[in-house]
Length: 356
Image 1: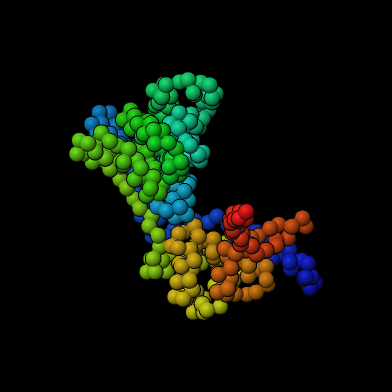
Image 2: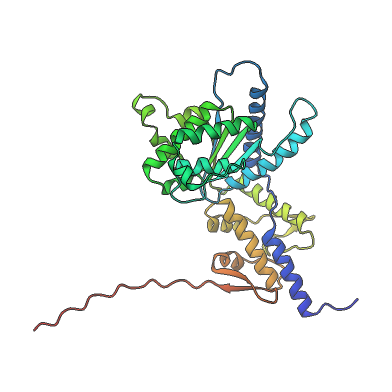
C-alpha cells in the first residue's frame, strides 16, 4: 500500500473538518424529547378537532416555546416538522388523512421593523399568493387577515409555527400592537394551532401589549390561549452531562473513524467515553449555557485538532474557539486565522485655545 503524502493527508483532514462543520445531526436530549412529545400530541389534537363533526366550543390552545438566542428553539421546530411528516405517513393508513405540504407551515420573522401587513403577506407567499407592495400598503389589515384565514382553511393547515418573535422588538410599539391584534384574529377565526418561538423579552412585550385584558383585571390573552414551554440555559447537573454524552455518541456514530471528539483528559472505559467534570464545566462557562454555543465549541475545537494533526482536543482548543475564524483557500484547504480584537478609538480631546 502506497504511503499517503503530506498533501493527501492535508486534503483528508480538510475533508473531515468540512464534514464536522457541516454535520447537522439531531441530539435527542431529554428536555427536547419532552417538548417534542408535547408538540406532537398538540398536532394530533388539531387533527382530531378538525375531523370531529361536533362544534368545538373552546378555541384551540397554542404553544409558546421560550428561550434565549442559541437555545435550540429553531432546531427543535425544524426537527418536529421532519418527524411529523414521517410519522404522519406511517399513520395515514389508519384514521388520518393523506399528508400534504400545507399541513404544517413554518414562517420566520427575519426582517427588521416588521409590520402586520408584511407578516401576513409573507405567510400568504407560502401558498403561492404573491402580493405586490402597492397592494399590501393600500389594503386594510382585515382584507389580508381574511385572505390568510381562507388559505389556512382551504389548505387544511393544522399548525403554523412562527419563529424569531424577538425580531418584533425592533418594530415601533404601534406595529407590535397591530401584530398582536392580527394573531388574535387568526387564532379566533381558524382551527389552526399556532406555535410561537421567541425570547422572554418578546413574550413580555406581547403581554404588555394586551391593555384591554390588563385593565379588566384578567389574564393576558397570551397566557389564556397559549401553553408556555421553556428552554432554559444549561446548568452543571446530571442532565447537562447526559447532553454531552449524547453529543459525543451522535458524533462517534456519524464519524466513527475519528476519536478526536474526546479530549485528552477524558479516558475510555471499555469503549465508553467518560465526561471529565472539569471539561464539562469549561464548555458550560464558555457557552454561557446556550445549546448553540455548546455545539459550536465542540465542533470548532474538533476542527482545530484535525487541522493541527493532533489526536485529542485540549483545553486550549476550547478557549480559542471564539478567537479563531476558518477560511477556505483557493486550493480547497481550510485555514484558521486568529481574530484580531478591534481597538477602541479614543476620542480626541478638543485642543484648548491659546490665551491671547
